[in-house]
Structures are given as structure tokens and as C-alpha cells.
Image 1 (cartoon, rainbow, N blue to C red):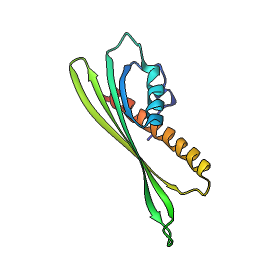
Image 2: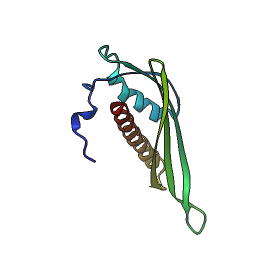
Image 3: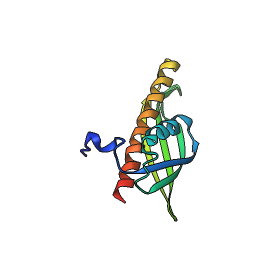
Image 4: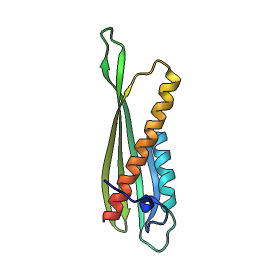
Length: 133
């Protein structure tokens, strides 16, 4: 669907503090960076969150000689949200099929880019969830 560009900027009226994070370092680092722009807004209620991210790279297909042709990249993130005396958990997942590259460096670079895209998508879903409350 359509989302205005200003929707995810720092002028949103929310206050988020990341208390802890576990799991995939790259995805969590990108999420923490994106969420940091929503910190210290003293005019609104504080959301305290913990983040747990699980990342998997699974073989999805092989050729006749048993060499891997494609991978499924899967990121699952669970947010535990504490707001005053209420605590809730929400989870989001992202999946992407990636071909096996002949160059390991190129494949690693591309995989890092996919993780950044996963973090962006999960961030947007999380903010949408918060704003709908």
C-alpha cells in the first residue's frame, strides 16, 4: 500500500527505548539505529522494548551434482513491548530467495544488503503497529 514519505521520520509522536537485543548483530544494529530517532520524546508515553532476531540461511535447491543453486534467507524478529504496566510481544518475519553466487565476497555483500532491507521492512511494520494502538 501507499505510505507517505514523512510517515517514518523522526517527527512521529512516539518515544522508544531499546533495553536489550539478542540474535543477529547486523539486523539488530540496523533496527536500533532506526529506532534511535524515536528516543527521548518526553511529551509522550515511553515504549520500552527488547528485540530478539533470528536469521537463517537455508539451502532451497541444488543442481544434479548436489551443488547449492539457491538459498532462502529468513529473518524473524520478536519485540517485547513494555508500556507502563502492560507487556506485549509481536513478531514479524521476512523471507527472500537468493541465488548462490560463484564469488563468495559478492554473495556476502549482497546478503548484507538483504539484511538491511529486512531491518527496514521490520522497522516499518513495528512503527505501524505502534501507531495503530
